[in-house]
Image (cartoon, rainbow, N blue to C red):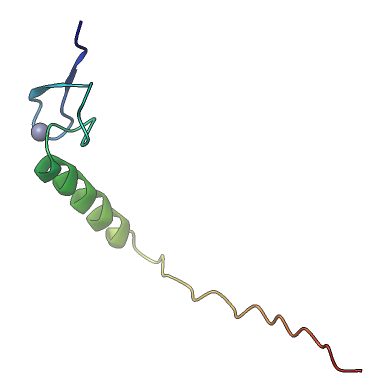
Amino acid sequence: MTRQIKCPTCRHETEWENNPHRPFCSKRCQLIDLGAWVEERYRIPGKKFEPAPDDQENEDDSD
Ligand SMILES: [Zn+2]
């Protein structure tokens, strides 16, 4: 028995088993969804990517 799922992007019915792109039906739909997600993320106003402060791991081995 094969499990059928609906692709979140195109709503096309696709198989769950042996599907490397699940829950999407294809790589295309996977990329579309990822693209939308990234776009949404960048659209958030006032939220900037703050560069992580350099972790100063000064391992002082000198005697
Ligand atoms: Zn799809």
